[in-house]
Length: 72
Image (spheres, one colour):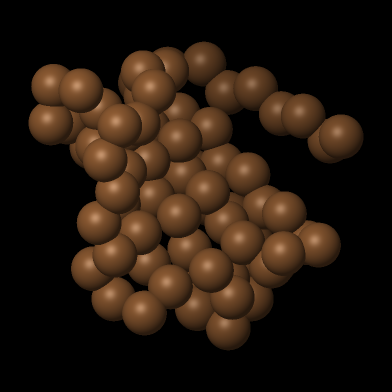
C-alpha cells in the first residue's frame, strides 16, 4: 500500500494494489474508488484532500508488513 499526497492539486491517493485500475466510480463528491480488472479495489482518490483528510499526522498501528518512507 502506498499513500501519496499531491500538493499542487490537493489530492490524496491511496494505492492499495500494484495492479492497474481499469474502472473508477465517484462515490461522493471528490471521492473516487478505482477497481482493477478483477473487480478488486485498487485505489482511492480524494480531491480537495486538505479539507477532507487529516494530513498532518499519520498513525500506523499493528501492520503486519514492513514500513518504508519516502520523503521526496
